Image 1 (cartoon, one colour):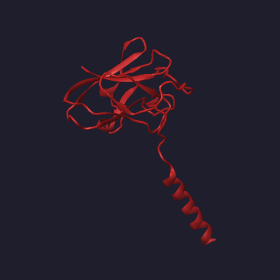
Image 2: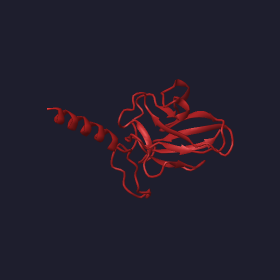
Image 3: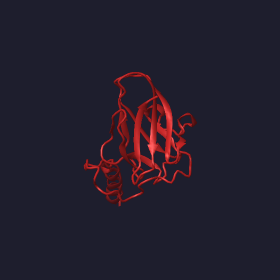
Length: 151
């Protein structure tokens, strides 16, 4: 009996350790997107990242600036630091949990394809100078995109 309990504990412990974040290795933006291409935006969405302790903070709530375009201002104070973030609702709901689809590195002014049904794929942005930036989720096309611009 004791051996069965130890085996069960070991199996549970090992299964928890072997779960790894999904990271897409396909860098092609030509690949067809099949799951939850754009969130419906029928609920509040937040910029959530290492700088918000991954919380859904009202200060970082996205607002609609145009039909299908949502954004928020954020102040990055550490040039050269990599800021990690996602755009998600308050509950990390599938279909409303937007991270990268192909590549998480975000360059200033260049849209990156998002996957709004991901768990681990966060974006990474490294500002070259401190100041205000605007992070936007563009859901107007067939696939959502995230873009970072100086504000």
